[in-house]
Image (cartoon, rainbow, N blue to C red; front, side, top):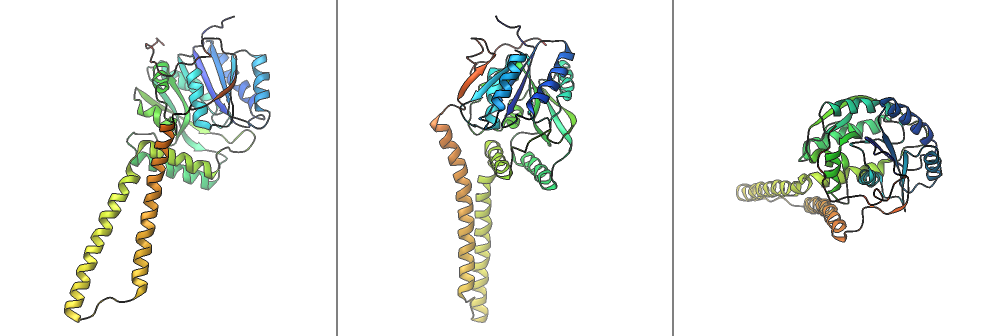
Length: 330
């Protein structure tokens, strides 16, 4: 039996979140039921190694509005979001993490702004509770750096928690790049956007799924996706070092002509060679990062592989990823 088409879709990636999911579902259900309009909750199992999928199945059996996409392995948070957007059917789609750091109770505020005519409503973190000073400091540094060097004005202190109108989702479905930075892509597509401030809570249970290594890769994906500044730095350094070398040659010639002495010593030569070698290796690494991402695109592999779905009808089983539908009324 075909279910009523949802007005709102909640997309929530999950990786090893068996402890959190029941409470997350309860709070989302309470918030969405209070709105009095049809909704769906799309849970994406991103290759979890615990009982996350089993918990998802229990929630689906209890409430058919809970739908499940289960990956064949761990593909990453950004690709899990992509899958959720590919399958979502609502007129407005909310992206939210399942760890309850982003409170579901903020969703009505996002919807209110959407009803006012905004196409993208992003949640801005005015306070981050329960996080170490190092993570908070590096997060602030990252957002300010990405704001300055990228070609799009990505709002500061925003995560993936946001609401997007159907036409924005359909546009994002046409963007199939592999190394994805979804919060940047949602700004890049344009449309009318605004923010809502909220307090980010500590994790309800479990451990963070973003250790420093993953945070660093995430930052590299963001920078290489939206900025050429790292490549341009090689040019700037080249001109700067060439300028210093020219000045150095002039100084050496003047000293030779006026005093009859020249700068001597292997240490000076060795330091100069090591310095230039280090600069060259750094920029070879930067070029390699960009080339690696080009290589990923050329291979043209699927963004993700779905092992199992629950709750979707036959039409929804074939998500459209390259078409843009007419704008629907709110």
